[in-house]
Structure formats: C-alpha cells, structure tokens
Image 1: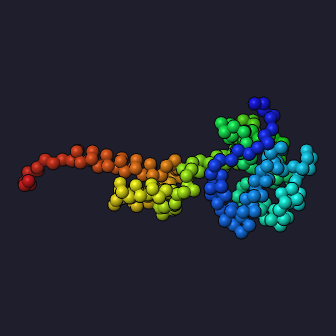
Image 2: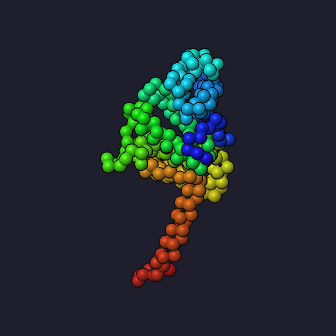
Image 3: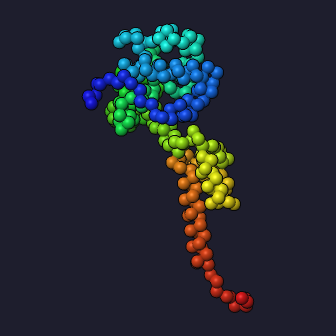
Length: 250
C-alpha cells in the first residue's frame, strides 16, 4: 500500500451509532438530519484526506455543502456549529472544513492512529491548523517528531473511552457517576458482595475522580479490590496473637 494512495470508502465500526457522541447528536432537535449530514460530509471529504474541497483550490462553504448533501442551508449551518462543539470538524486557516476523525474511518485498523497523526502533522507543517494549537515538544525537537497538543488530547479522549467500550449498554454509578456497569455486571456484584457492593462502587468512583486513573473494566476492578481486601483480612487473622496474658482467663 503506497503512502499517497487515496481512499474512497468509510470503515465504520458496528457500534458507530451507539457511541455517546452519536446518541447525544441524534437526540437533538433535527439530530437525525445532523447524523445524515455528518456521514455525507465524511464521504465528501475522502478525496481530499478529510478536507471539504470543491476542487484543489476552492473549499466547500455551507451553501455548497447544502447543495451537495440536499439539506437546507439553515440545517447545515446549525449542524456545523454542533459538529465544531463536539470536535468533529475544525476550520483550517484557509477557511476549509476538516473532518477531524476521518483518518480513523478509512484504511487498515492497524495503522489508524498513525495515519491520523501523520495527516495532522502535514496540516501543521503547512500552517493549516488553527493558530490556537501549540506544540508540546521540547524546543530542540523537530515538530515532525512530536505531535501537537491536540494529538495528546485525542489520545486522552480515546483512553478514557477504553473503560467505556461497552458503555452504550452500561449505566453510570458512584458518587461522581464515573463507574460504568452493565445490568448483568451489577447483578453479579450484588450477589457476590451483598453488603459491600455499593461501598466498592463509591470507593472506585472517588478514587478515579481524585487520581484521574482509568480502568478497562470497572466490574473486574471491583472484584480485584474485594479479593485483595479478603486476602489481607485473612492474613491479619492468621497473624493475630491469641496467647493468654497473665491475669487473663480463656
């Protein structure tokens, strides 16, 4: 596969429409229109690596997007505002719209992240990214060896989503609503820890909120903590001094 090969298809995961972003998007007024428009904008951007261009020189405008997608101009303008708030698109310095996640939706999954990084570095070198972005590289590091800060922000968002990879069917628990459990997971914990399950949920919620630490499976983490506590209690019991002191009776 050559580096300059162009892709003309999207590769969507089966839970694309069950992601938190899409669920919230489609729950809005005209949300189904926005969802349809988003996919059409993704497809329109493929020929230019995620940038919405009419040709090699002219970027798309809300009016041309409305014409090509067969949506009303007002719908397009409102949708673009929402997409920007969600981080789904950016406006480059030349005024063109850039679909930020496009590099994650095309090509082979093994190189998705690297391709997105390379594409953003290309835009960075051409001074097309918004001026608000700054490099977090040491001053003596070439820019193309260190991604801009938005790459780290994207990674942070992806890392946080790992713990919720099935959160579409899970519910939030704990004091800070950051412990995600499916119904069957909660039922199993209530059976295994009938008097302690709520305590462990709150403990995990407070720990993650205070430290920023994330876990792939919250149910598994609670079980591990419970097993460790049980082991510690058993060890303390074995080491307890049962000898009779002078003056005491058994």
